[in-house]
Image 1 (cartoon, rainbow, N blue to C red):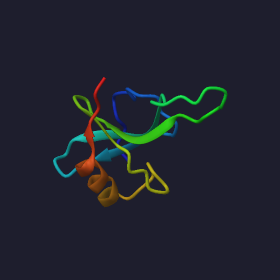
Image 2 (image 1 turned 45 degrees about the vertical axis):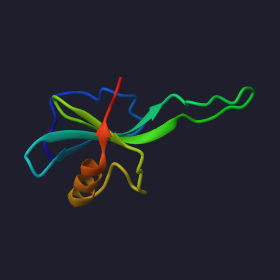
Image 3 (image 1 turned 180 degrees about the horizontal axis):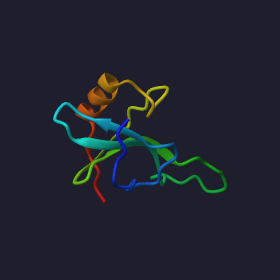
Image 4 (image 1 turned 30 degrees about the vertical axis):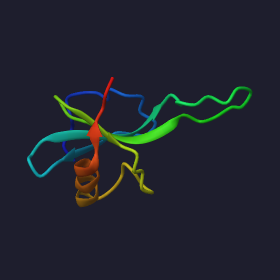
Amino acid sequence: MIQTRFYPRGNALTENVSFTDRDDVQWLVYVEGFPLVHQSWGRARLPERRLRFDSAFDSRATALLPAGAPFLRGDQLQSLLDSAGAVVR
């Protein structure tokens, strides 16, 4: 596994996994937690989660969160990256 030279840009809930896509772009992959859109007053809730991909110049995320993520095979990560959208801040 190749070590990345950058850090997660989001709120990582899991260990980071390095992944190189079919175009030789290196990504850092992890499950990210982010604030809930709808708050339920008086109830404790876990943050929303998504699978996040960070490269040196781009960040993408997908709500698809298969069991074992981010520790998946390269072809599975490539498929998830292909379906991921840009992270908007």
